[in-house]
Image 1 (cartoon, rainbow, N blue to C red):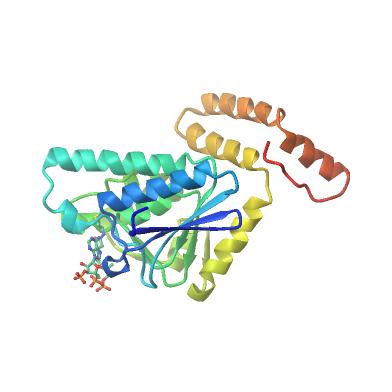
Image 2: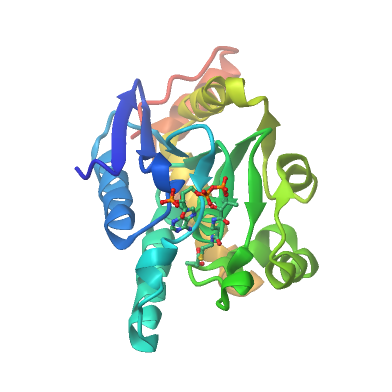
Length: 259
Ligand code: CAA
């Protein structure tokens, strides 16, 4: 694995840390590939149920795509870089295991877009969010024009993307961009607590919820309802569903086998 990305399995949780703090964890192509490889490793490990993405250091989650690497791209190369980023983040969003962004500082440009591709965003109170691309003469290219408006609404997305201004963690929470804000010193504990809550649920049910929300959100409501019903039906083929309903009726905690 690339040193730019660290991988640590703690119980059922895989922590993936983007490790270029001297560059505020800016995303160059190699780093994005290493994140994808680490996420793939977590997917392949049956012991892992939740994935956490965070940044090294106290200043940044990710301060964007690497501006130096991007500065010399020709138009066709930039288009292909954008498709590469989009595909990498799409794969993360389609992960059947929940992905939590532990946002420990700046989440700007591609960093905000990376956080948007995660299923849950928990931010330290010193985090700052923004899409500053217009100040560089460019625009979001890692899905930000689409995901941001789906998360915070078109009006706020237009405001953030056109102004290029940063917002603090409290404002990100107010508009629904951050699910939770905690003191910076408590971020790891808060993310661990949230991850453990997800680990206690049926992993098969979680995967189907993600599929219904992510894939369903990209189609019309009727098709999405058909997809939802199909996935709902599949839940009834699992031992997890038998265990969950039996445990409720027996007034005990469920212990999901993940089958
Ligand atoms: N790419 C490359 N290097 C970056 C970077 C980035 N996105 N962000 C920060 N760095 C580097 C800086 O160049 C600096 O390196 P040196 O020490 O070698 O000079 C180092 O990280 C520390 O950064 P600063 O000295 O600038 O730290 P600061 O505290 O003064 O400022 C900041 C922090 C406001 C976040 C500032 O670094 C900044 O504005 N960064 C760029 C943010 C940005 O524009 N992001 C969007 C990128 S475009 C994009 O992401 C496109 C897309 O959608 C795919």
